[in-house]
Structure formats: C-alpha cells, structure tokens
Figure 1 (cartoon, helix red, strand yellow):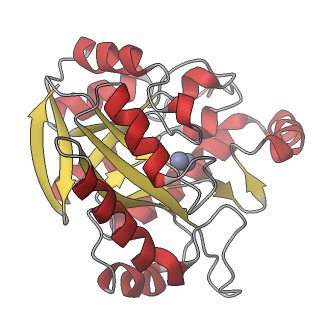
Figure 2: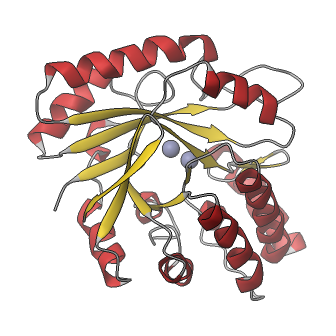
Figure 3: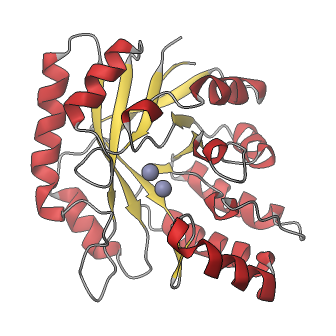
Length: 269
Ligand SMILES: [Zn+2]
Ligand SMILES: [Zn+2]
C-alpha cells in the first residue's frame, strides 16, 4: 500500500507553498509519491492566461524544479503534471504546449461554463441565482457536454474532479446516467483515469468527487483512478486523504494509477 497524492498546486500557479516546501511536508507525512498539477488555463482567442494559471513559458522551469526536488529527496517520487482547463477550440494550442514539455501527465478540468466559474467563491452568488432561475439540470447537462468534448480531444490522461459542478451543493433532478456513462466509456477506450478527489469534502457539497454512482460506473468499466486532495496550501497535502482511500476501497478499488512521462503504472492502494 502506497501513499500518493496526485493533485497539488504550488506557487507556479495559485498554490501558497513552493515545490520544496510541499516535498518536505510530503516526506514528513509519509507519502511515497506526489504529483504537482499546476493550473494551465488559457482561453483561446484572447491567448491570455487566467489569473490562477501558470505562465506557459514557465512550464519548462517548473518541470526542472520538480525533477531537482525529486533528486534531493531519495525515496519520494515527485511528478510534474498540469491541471488543464478545457475550453472548446483550445486543442491545438494545448497540443503544442504538451508536445514541447516533458510532463508526466495532464489532467483535464471544467471550471467554467461560459462566464461562470463553477468553484470560485467570487462567482458563487451569481451561479446560485442562475441555478435558481434556470434549474441545475441545465448546467449539469452543459457541464457534461464540455467534459465529453474534453475527453474526446484525446489530449488528457486524467479527468479531475469529475462532477465539481455540484460544488455548492446543487443536485440534479433528472437521471444523467446515459450521458455520464458515455463520457466514461470514451475515457475507458482512451485509457484515461478518473480522479477521486477530497476537494468536495472541504466544500459545501461535503462529498468526495466523483459521486458514488459515478465511481461505481468507473469500477464496472475498469477505469483506473488517481487520488488527489487538490492541495493549495501545505496543510491540505493530506486533507481528508484517509476518507478518499476508504471511499475508493469501498467501491472495490485496490489499485491506483501513477504516471511517468505519460506512461501509466498501477500501484497498490
Ligand atoms: Zn480544479
Ligand atoms: Zn486543482
């Protein structure tokens, strides 16, 4: 059994601690492997990065710093990934960035539906009002459509926080099983993994992502999982870590996906 966290943000994007600080903390807390997943968020058209994103020109430095950190802490594996915002039309831009950098893996996230950031406190009120007026099903359906497109692009290795759109505690009233399964079946064919995230346990939804139903679909499709706490500060490196280990096991998972230069390897959970 290994202790692994595959979702950490350092000061290269919007995290509050440096790579070295996290690595020291990971050693202290008994981790065997951690992966940094800096945000990469560039809207096509403007070509300007969003405020929480790493500067694309700094990705090389970032990877180098991760490799150096791994060398200085024998026994801890340290990986360099990106948590990438998918915006329709950004495929070729992202492909160029991925091809010119020696990343271990890329995770895809949908953080935006149009002008609404789905998990930013700043947008919470406006999103709540829109959901009240239009119903959550409409947003969930739009969210799944975007996630489906992102998966279809074939650019990513992992789906981050599959249903983060539920962040503020919203619930669907219709059954979206068909749409959810369609995305997961494609993800399975493309040999992607799905993240089990403890982030939701620190948010109003107070549940891990994805919902149990979705994680069970993943299990039945033999889709590998990664584990992540979505740490933005040092003390979040193991935030609700035991709960997500327990959660994944309760659905029948006994292995975790890890990545080395794009290659998936399973380790015991
Ligand atoms: Zn995210
Ligand atoms: Zn994140």
